[in-house]
Length: 97
Image 1 (cartoon, rainbow, N blue to C red):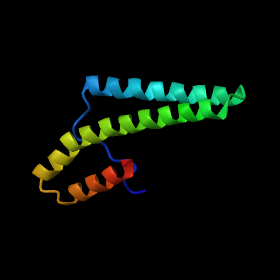
Image 2: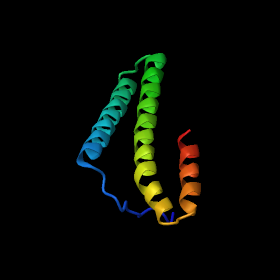
Image 3: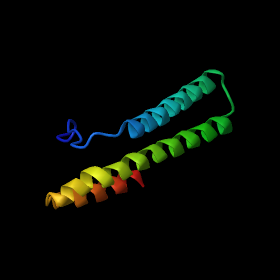
Image 4: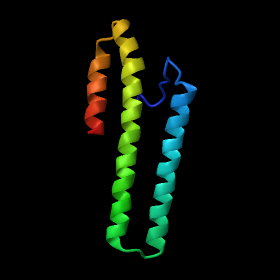
């Protein structure tokens, strides 16, 4: 993957960074809870309910990152004349569906 090591030109605000880290910590905790449910041989329906909650939380996390990307990286790219940035943004939106 050639794009694996790019960095934002506009740093995330401390508030945004804190919000993202908190959400990611909760998601990590939810995943640990699912692992524990498996170890305890819990009912499949209960596990699937937790899987759905993690998927929803992860998608919400992705939308926050996407919004920030659109407001910073994409906007900056457009101002700088980068015509490929919109195509990249559309591809990212499709990945999040």
